[in-house]
Structures are given as C-alpha cells and as structure tokens.
Image (cartoon, rainbow, N blue to C red; front, side, top):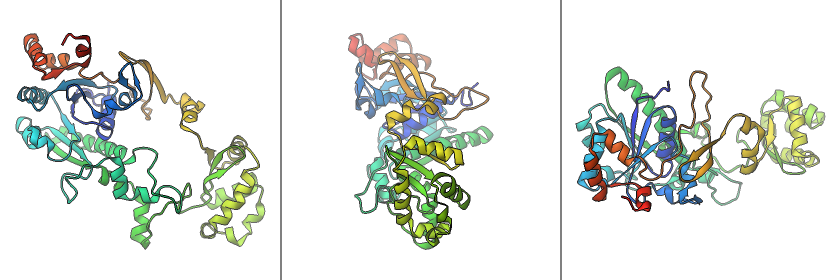
Length: 405
C-alpha cells in the first residue's frame, strides 16, 4: 500500500512548481486529478520538443496523474469543480493572487463546501506583501532572492542557475507543507490554507549564506565552482576536462597533497598551513593544483582520488550523466509507454524505500484524457456528460482531433 492511497488532489497548477509537487504526491499514492482549461491546457504543453503532437517536457512533471479539462469560467464548469471538491482532500493552485477569487474557487469559497479541505496556493511572491500582485516566474524569484548575483564567475554578468531552482524549491516546500497539514488533519479534522511563494522557498534554502551575512555582513558573490568557506573544494582542469576535488578538512588535505598530488612540501608551506591560509591564498592554490591536474585525464585523477579516499568526481555534460553507469544502476532512467508519444523515457523518483514501491505509476495524460471518466465517477449521467462536451464546458483533446466530441 502506498502512503497517500485514498488521498485525492484537485490540481489546478501549471508550469513547474505545482506540477512537480503533485507529481511527487501522485507517486506516493495520491489520486491527482489535473484540471486544465479546454483547448490549451497547462501552459507547459506548448513546450517543445513535441512527439506526435504531445509535449515531451510536459510529460516529465505531469506523469502519474489524470487530466480533466473544464471551463471554470462557465457556471456549469464550476458546478463540476465543486462536485469534484466533494470527493477531494486537497486543492492546489498556482494562479496569481486574486484569480481564484474571481473564478469563485478560492479557499474561502471551497471551505464553505468542505470545511476540512486542504488548500495550497503557490505564487511568485505570496498572498500578501507589497509584491503580492506581481507576476513571478522562476527567474524573477532568482533575481529577488539574490541567486543571479551569487551564481557564475567573479566579474561576470548575473547568471541564472542551470535549473529552475525557485520553482523546484517552491514545489518541494509545498510537498512537505501539505504532508504536515494532512498529518494534522488526520488527528484533528482541521482543514488548512497553505501559502507558498517562489521567493520565500528559495530564500529558505540560503542556509549558509544567511549565516555568513547575519554573522559578519558578508554578501555572497559569484565564485565559479569554488566554495565560500573551504578549499580545495571546486572543479579543476584536467588534460581532457575537469575533475571535482573536495579536500575540505585537514585530514583530506593531507591525503590529497601526499597521496594524490605528490606535493608533501605543501604541508609546510605557510600559504597552505591552515584552512584560513588556504582560503586567503586560493588563487595561488588553484594555479598550483591545475598545473598538476592538467597533466593527466579526469579518469586517472578520479582513480587516484578514490584510492586515497579523497572525494572527487567528473564534471559531466547532461547527456553523459544520463548514460553514466551509476545513474543507470540506481534506476534513475525509467521507460514507459505513452498512449500518444509511444515508448518514452523519464527520470525516476529519487528515493528508495524498503517498505513500498515508490515508482512512476503511469505516463502523463493527454489534455482531458480522463474528463468523461472523472465526470462519471462524480455522478454525472452519460447524457449529462454528453451535454457538457457539446456545450464546450468539458473537453477531451483526442476526441476533438478525431471529430467525435
């Protein structure tokens, strides 16, 4: 049995933050019903590449869910939504603040029907504060939190992180917040409103940076691959690429210089005697290490580091990561059959549990794939369902393409 079996989610989210959250909930056992607007659906369905008309990027965070396509601006569409609310445990949305109230599906309206409902809102800046009404995507949040000013190389332009870090931080924050609220609800029967923002979630992850600032006023600046508190702890050039080295304490430093780099004299060098000395002379240290590491290949250095028990590794391109034998052995690449895309690959769940199978449950749905099924489950008759389709309140993209809707 999966831990969230029997937990039903009405998922009104789009893009990445909310869909990432609900993907995890779905693969922990929740029945996630993704509610999408007719014709266009989740905005991320537009993202290429497309295979047989379906967005491959959309299929990544929207797997293991069902899709019901409804026009929530129509009174009949809202009626369907509230019938679905009757069977739901959680409503989650990531519209701009105020949109759900205009649609008549905000928390206050929903809890009148279901007092014990959990309701989670994810937005760029949160439901209050002076920036409340600003639209906010990941890059805006990275800018506000300071990430664009602490990523990249010194004297370079502001640099975006390689992934949508604030979107994912908000999604992860929503996951543990929802689980906490559900634990409380099971004990007390109490519903809960959960307000998550991309900015707050990203800022909460600046654990060491905030410590340095509050402790000494230090403002984090770009350092390339260097660590702000320790060295050697970065990527160094090799004869055919880069190798990461993490000799970030005196024990590992001694192993590195005596067993890997063959520079025992550095133990007596006043520039490198202590960690503070090494940090003060980090430019010299990088130059001297790279004068050595560039004489051999990355693979040779990794072998030497492993032999000495010093943490190290390659700096891979993403395609090399996906082909890496360790990644493959850990089951992180999963294949499944999509009804339109066909055989496809996705990234598997990262946690391995001993007591249950945490896995991809099914491929992402096409737009409105489960509309008729979901309406029937909610008690609509076949005649009522046909009328909702005919009046464009309900939608199924495949029926539309086949001309049978």
